[in-house]
Image (spheres, rainbow, N blue to C red):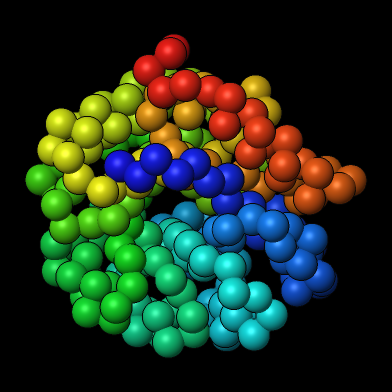
Length: 225
C-alpha cells in the first residue's frame, strides 16, 4: 500500500450549477472523487461522461471515478476517453469482475473495486494482485451526507492487513460519512485514501475544510485504534 495519504473531495456534495467553480475551490487536493449513479444500482442519478470531459478541461487533478452503476463494462471506454484516471466498479454489480477489471486496465488507467458495507472482504481478496485500489463503503451507497458505519473499520483493517501481507501497492479507500472525527478512525484502521463530500463542500470554505481533514489524517497512525 502507498504511504501517501490523500483526502479526495467528492463532488457529489458540490453545487452542480457551479461545478467548475466548486472544483477550483479545492484545487490543492491531488484527487477529485466523482460519483456516477444510474438510478438502478443505487437510487439516485448523477452524471455521465460528458460532465467528466467538461471538468477535465478545467483541472489536471486525478479523476477518481466511482461507478455505482449496473453493467459498468458498457461505459468503461466512455469514461476513460472522457478523462478518468481511475475507474472503481462495485463487486456487487460485476458478475465477471476479473474481466471488468482487465477491461479497465486495457484503457491504460487504474482499476479499483468497491465493496458495500454488507459485502465480505473475501469477495475481492483473490483479485488484489490485479487491482490498484479497494474501496470500502462506510455508508450504504446512493446518497451524500449519511452517517458513518463504524463496524466497517473491521473490513478496512482486514483489507489493509492482507495488502501488507502480500506486499502489494494497493490503496485502501473509504467513502461515506468521513469528517474530522471519523477520518482519523479510518486512517488508523489502515485507509490511505479518504473521500469526503459534505465535510468539504458543505462548509463555508471548502479549501480550509479540506486542509483540516488532510491534517487530521496525517496526525493519525495506522494500527493505533
